[in-house]
Length: 520
Image (tube, rainbow, N blue to C red; front, side, top):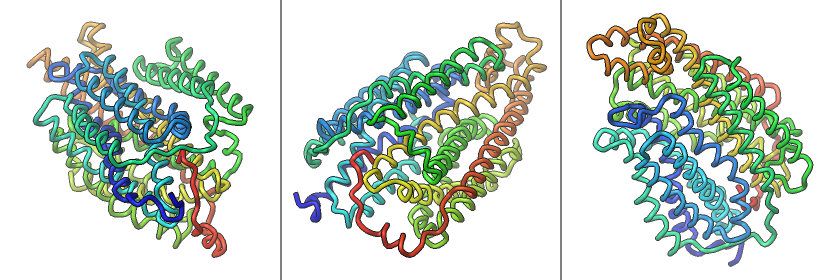
């Protein structure tokens, strides 16, 4: 195949790849809407808040830990083969998630879904780089990104419709037909390709990163569960996680084929752009976690209504993402990213002003503004990453940024979820004082747990409803302020280190075709 002409069926191939990615992206946004139902003891699994955090993070941590390695394995053994295997694993794990009988089964099945997702994501981009000529590659990746945005947009409303009409497992079962159709199309349309000079594997780095992150996240979530950081159950796993991650950094600096090249962080432009994306996803994923319960429990919306309420956020991304590169080129990365970070931080801080009587129009407006600002963060960050690395490392930079986004999102759910849990428990202590000690501790962990006790007690439990709403809203305010402070740190990083508007010469240089690495 002539690399300058591209594959004759490249656009149908792109359509298959975008469709294949639909299940992976759709699943994460659907799960947010389903969390309240999964937490219900009658119609769900009775999952606690910490178990829900693990249901999200087990997928994310495995996905992030294996992303690079599966990209390299795909380069070696065949990207079509890797994509096919990834879809098969994702479909089987989705089936296991749908029929999980308890929260632990769901957590393990979600981790297995992460294995499949890690095989799918790098393979799709690598195949795009292989079948499209340099002149069309940017447009193709833009279509690919648009497909991701569309999946994000339709996820919440799809989840709401499924929860409204079927059982909670349907939010995972919907992946199965998508996977089956994708596998048929992949077999029929997508060509096989390999990297003639693939990178070497780094199994030690993969194992160290997953052990370190899981231990750290476990310690953080356990701290929220116990409402203390002084317990050995919190300190030991947290310190072990930090120590193992320290060994991981040492190992990655020592070898010449690292799974995650930490030496790139010595470049301040690269580290500032990566840091900005990490901060945004940390705050966003943590925020989405508490917004689900705010909308469905405190505000009383049904799952389908809560899903519909997220449409302005997704619509803003669909509207502004295609325009964002033009804004970035017109004003430069520093200005556009700084303004966007300021807006995102203000939006996060505004959640600290919401309560049971906040007008829904105002909530919708904030969602839209936050979505528009986030749509303008990724292009300047991506441009800064690509400008700060050698051309031959463009794909590696893309994969590193994807890994940081996933890890930051997992830490956001863990940290902000623990802040919410600790604050809620403190606020509920007076109201729960009359309950037996064992019941009191369980009922105080989260608003879902309190509502379960209210259901059991019947009329006697109604006195706990308003204190629970008040404690949750107060906890949400604290959590929102913490996320806003983290956003302020992001503003400082961007304003200080993000590169400014490039010169004309740099523009011309960047407009030349770039052959990206297959692991992007």
